[in-house]
Length: 110
Image 1: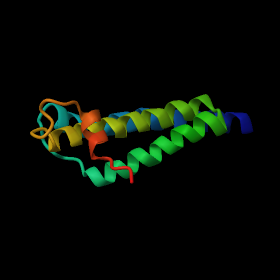
Image 2: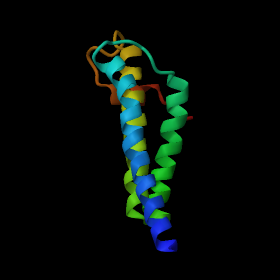
Image 3: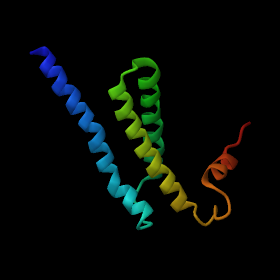
Image 4: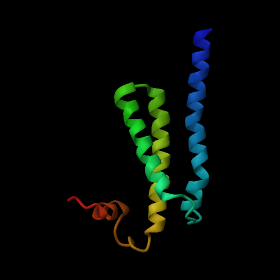
């Protein structure tokens, strides 16, 4: 009985990753296809950082393949929205340089 409950729980958790990817699609579509700034950049910076930490935790501490996939999908989704949002916001400023070099130029090491 306990193994059946654990299998159901594992399947439900796997579906979370799929649902997360589906949930991000409208925002990605707005940003990429419609060029509509529909994402809060501050929120996505925080979400990308936290999902990135979760992904690293899953990869190096838990070493659970299912958690790695779900956390990785969340991280990639957040990062995609963040990059598209930043690209849309700073499009005029970064016409001739790519987004990564633009961001690196903004980081000041003191």
